[in-house]
Amino acid sequence: MSTVTSSPSRRVRELLALCFSSDEVGGFQNLESSVTELVKYLNSLSENVALNANNELLNDVIEVLEEILKVLSSPQVDQDVIDELSFQLPKVTSNFADLSSRCLQLVEEIVDRFVEACNPRDMLSILCEALDIARCCHLPSSCSTPLLHGLSKVFTSIQRRHFEQLKVAVPIVLNVLKDISLKTDVQVEILFDKAVGVAFSIRDVSSKLNEEEKKVRCLLGLYVIQITAILSVSIKERTTSCVPLVMQLEPFLTYCGLTHLGLVTGNDTEKLMSMVVGDDDDDFVSSFPDIKLGASLLLIWAKISQGVAEATNAALGGDVDELQSSPVKRWQAYGMLKYILSSGNLLWEFKRHTIEFLLDITKGVTSSQCNDGEIDCSDYTPSIYAALQAVTLVIMYAPDADLRKKTYEALKRILSDIPAPQRSHVLRALVTNSQSPSMTAILLGLVKDSMSKSSLQATDCATADMHVIELVELVLRPPEGGPPLLPDQSDAVLAALNLYRFALLFYSRENEAGEETSRVGSEILAKKNLEKAYKEWLMPLRSLVSCSIAENVKEDHGHESSLDTVCLLNPIELVLYRCIELVEEKMKSH
Image (cartoon, rainbow, N blue to C red; front, side, top):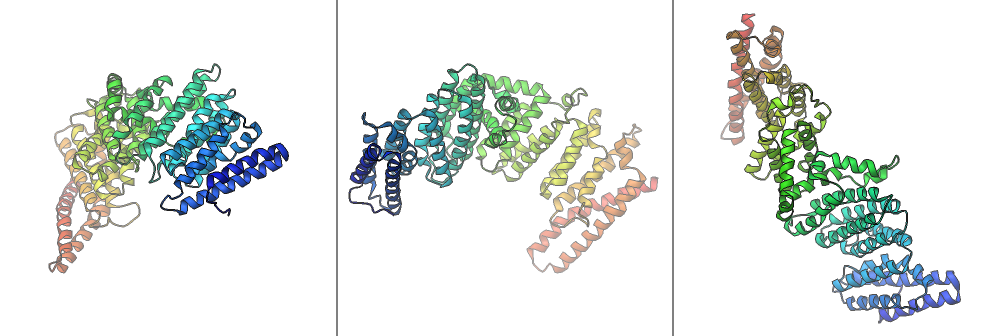
């Protein structure tokens, strides 16, 4: 390791002079050797600064950076020397950017000087490499801002093959932004101010092109969407401070031909990707992992931010009307908004606005709209199912009762917005994959509610077809074998018994009224299914519940846990015995 002298700026001046004299006397090899020695010295200084907690070397660093900038700004500087220095000094000097605002300013000016003096294509690769090194070495976030600043200037200096070079650089910028934004020391506003600067540079490049203009514009759209996701995830309680950044992003949507409706349905992101992505572009696509999250968030930001919302209020109102009138577009929106609801890194504020938006677009929507035989929902069912899973997570983990109440209403509306045949399969999948007995109970309660409504709406009868039997069996006779675990699964078991009891009474009443029963009723009241329920569900459960109550009563000597268990099992026992009575009664009638 080189020894830091008492006057670092003087030593740097000597090393820089050596670089220029080496080029004149010894040619390229001597120049390369001199630059290497300069870099070693600067790295040594950087290490000493890192070890000095009191920043006693700060003035020395400022003097060193001023000396470098002074030499680079000299009109007599040799181009070969500055070219050789450009390969090393941007990444080395950026290590000092986080020491003070003055250091940051000087490093930016040094990088700018290289951008002005060197070949743009060379500087593009140099700065991209420096950014990648800063990311991999986990340097402070401010060390990358001068490099991003320089990169935004390089973009506008490129003379040809713009799209090809931007397509290489943009993923690097995004990876750097994502990694740095998650650091605890990150200054989000400063970092994303530079990121927005990059967006403006790409727009300036696009406006000067002819043949590649459309592709560059689409690449800009993807970049803006992705940085929206990165920005949103990095916010920890500072939403209001990021409003100016969001307002800067909004005009890019218009410039790129994007709309909030197109973004929230996913149509715009597909259009952008199809224009930019080639046949062997897997690496490029992987640089946009949050593109669907970002597209959805752009709409939610428009709701959150008063400044943006005032500019787009009419358009948003029109989007809500369009979504209310189009089942297919609503289904697409569910599939996009799930990325916000399922994210564990976003503030709850985003999820609250998302739930409210879901309530807006499903307001006044009836199940008859989605039961149109001409509309095929099968292609959208997987994404709707994933959206409903995300909704259930919000219900379980929401921080306040108001949000849970709104989310439960959204769950009911989205379920009713699915055509009856697919709705049954979705409900079954939700119950099967539910990890929470309480959520399973909620879902089974929704099935019961839909059955009660079906007496008034014949088109909804399929909602409760023999999947009721399957749903009850999933809880009372789990696929993994054995009886349900009590008292852990008490909520789910009680809900399953209530559903089965309701189904027995519901279709018995229809039969007694002389009404024509659907396949639902005939299956539930069929002798084979009654016998199966009696022998395989109810009787084993009766033995389990009776033994559990007896054991806990016997052990109850003031133990609160035993008393709680008995209180949980008593309602199950009451409904269970009622189900047994009903089944025995129906079997006698056969």
